[in-house]
Image 1 (cartoon, rainbow, N blue to C red):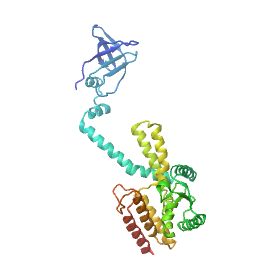
Image 2: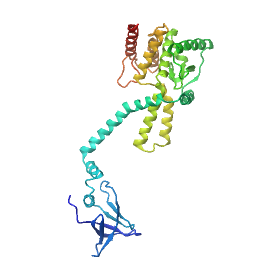
Image 3: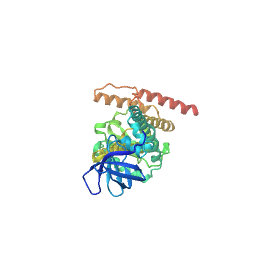
Image 4: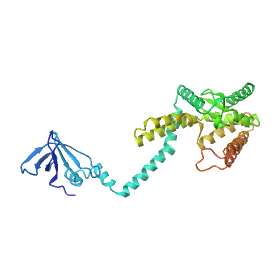
Length: 352
């Protein structure tokens, strides 16, 4: 658009809420205001012009506090030569549905990329440099939360607890894991039933229901070795940092999330340690196989126990158990799990 000789709009004199029709002419370095009912022009010193926002009228401010308002955005851009600026080009692009569509797709792709690759990478880096003292504090907070929300006091006999604690100690020694220090706790699983979880600071919780389902100690040993693998891989910390990263993304995208969302994120940090991605589960499975073989125990036993855990859970929920790994599943299906375990067993034995 050719630069216009003048702009037509409304002039708001200094310290006045009223306006008069007027014309703005000249150059940014030498501007003049001419009132519609007065042919005499008065000089004004340019201060700023507002950015273009849809069809909102633009405001040109002057150093004496007066303001000129013009609704012809294209004319304002041409008058002040803003059309060739970055924001001018961006404004024109925003009026194109093709650009808006491309920008929307690109934004979604970037967010997916951050969630899929960026957050795990950053979470892994953060977990690797987290001091043991911080892990211990997170561990204590997570334990307090799961005890209040999920678990109750174990009713397992003390002799049985002692046996399993001794077994756990042998597995820890075999694994060579010493940082963070590992400890085993027993709880009644309540509504989550047969389960075992590893908290960030090295606390591993075994539920009474899981112990009851086990037919031999090798099955429990395999599960404990699996949970030790989660601690060794710092999986709980990585999951927690991912939750914090997601919360940060929500805040960036949506602004101030408010107390409710903050509370949800805070609780998710504690509960997130209960579930892991397929990758983490597979890593923990391989760790279990390595430890069980080193301890001269059955590396397949824990999968047998998991078969019964899945069967009991689906029976209680009146669902059909499946061995398949679904596309959206966080845990590998037991059939795939058994195949992966077998492959890792063969790989280790092949190196011997």
